[in-house]
Image 1 (cartoon, rainbow, N blue to C red):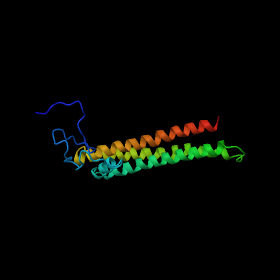
Image 2: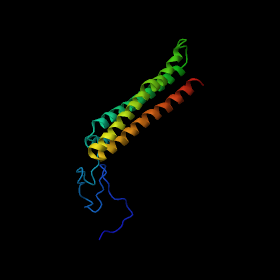
Image 3: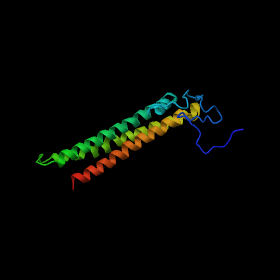
Image 4: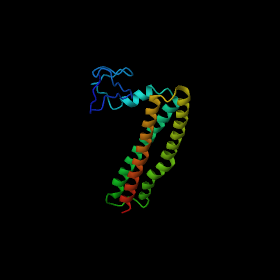
Length: 168
């Protein structure tokens, strides 16, 4: 007879719920033992390997590109704020450089997000038809959404704050 417990049962990063199995055993789905600590990239790598859809993998790669573009745009804004807010005359058109990050966001990063959403939509459609809603595919879609969200919203916030700081 299994006793009820107030603790949340162990659930593996692969999504398998081994309730009723040996608590010190390994996950029959991915082989991870209960006490084993994996790196912070283990779950996305697991979902990449178990996805089965090249469309979702390509969409995830585009989502990661969106995150990288967001980080690069944010770094550029921080550099420009530091450079332009320093003393001295930088030239009559030096302030125009602050337009680069919003233009990059609008004409590069936003189209990559739209492209990623289209590719991920095709991938979700095809993976459901081919293999059912596989756990790796669902997890990879969630990671793609998180990358796009952090890349777009994070860089937009930094761009807005940087622009306000420059034009104060």
